[in-house]
Length: 229
Figure (cartoon, helix red, strand yellow):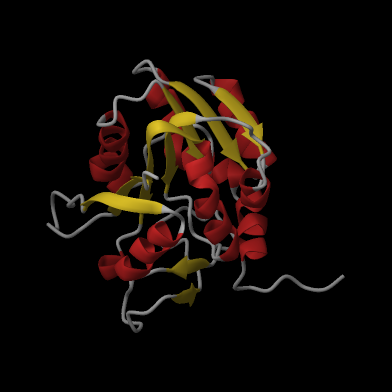
């Protein structure tokens, strides 16, 4: 059997399968400072700004966002490729949870239509993400929206050149329980906008939530909707 490319979508999945348990603990025990201070509220506010009755939480992990939205009256389906994370999400409740890869979602496995499709720090790959985003318009009700929260390219880019490409992962700042960090595909703001446009959507709003202490962007949020034909 051939080794997995260390800079690939397959490697991302392998890493998250290994780190499902410590990730669940980190999220549920509010150990991630930026999430606690800024980004959790930012994504909830962005989704609720659309007043959705239903939502698809893509890359839902252990299900915290689904639970938050369900508590606000939203009917949520959460989907993730990692079976252990889906088990943990289902155990905590708040929605319907399904194991599926991004390729399977793009191929129509879910057969669902929702008011909002949301991906919160979940679009870190390349080919699988490209295909998934292209399929989003088919999963949205009339007037529906696609909402992405991701690492802010300027603050997360480090000292490397500002251009799209694979980067090595890191668990810096996390506990020693985490191993084998997932790589991620760095996208510039321009490339995010291009991906949305190429997928038959238009960008309606771009938000840059600021860290209350550093004053620097803690994330990038993009809100888009399908082009009207």
